Length: 334
Image (cartoon, rainbow, N blue to C red; front, side, top):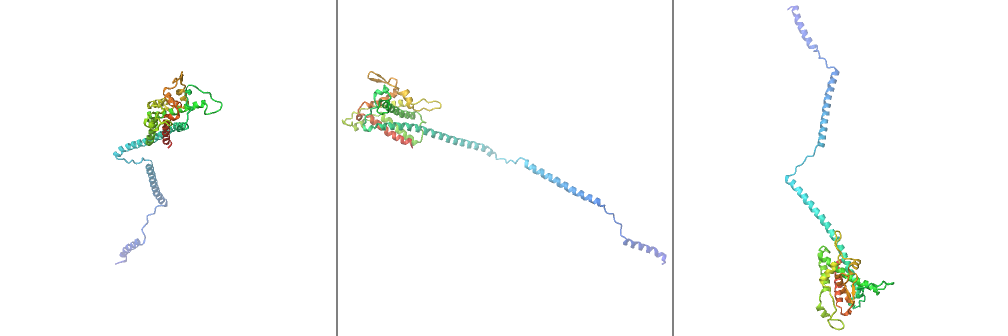
């Protein structure tokens, strides 16, 4: 083989060798600015997504704060029962408050009435105690003449002067009538002295005993006592019948008004409107302008000055009244 024939082969081998030795051309890299823009675009997309997510979260939070609370539906039977329970509870509370107020008002009223009756009882007790009925003392101030005359007032005070003796006489009549007035008010008005049941029983017992003391016959007692001195049973006596006692009490009561309950006349109104002066015709004293029922009480009192003390059973009657007044006072002062 000639050299000319071998040249093409060598050329092929050389080209192959060169292809292995010489590296392949490289693709040129992206410019730096392009790479930076791509990175910035990626970051911008991430921030936008975060911002939108934050806005969505805030919107969801505010919606949860402003949304109406969830209502829990009650069972139908409970919806019907609750108004009834509220009505019953309100009624019970109203009743309890009203009952308490009524009870307090009744207590105040009872205390006031109790004080009024106790004052009248004290006054009559003091007057009867000063009479010393058991001592058979003469009662000089019980004179019929005081019914038709008015003694002059003395310059100096003297209890034995006719001016003050007439006061004692009228005062005794008034205080007896005043107690009968409160007794009658208790009888006709169920709300008067409407206190504890035990007190009511004792008050009624005392009132009943006072009525009996002024009106009963006491025939057996008169026989048993005998008149001191002569040993007989012929007592001088007088009574105020039970119906007359009620009439006296009714006369002593003031008229009830819209704002004022009935009460017993005071001493001044009694002297002006009820007692007044009687009239004398010859030797006989007539009722005259004096109230008829008050005259019954006056006659009972004034007759005690006309008979010897030791023969007058009216003193025994007033002694019984005094004893019951003490029992009544114990009830009214507890």
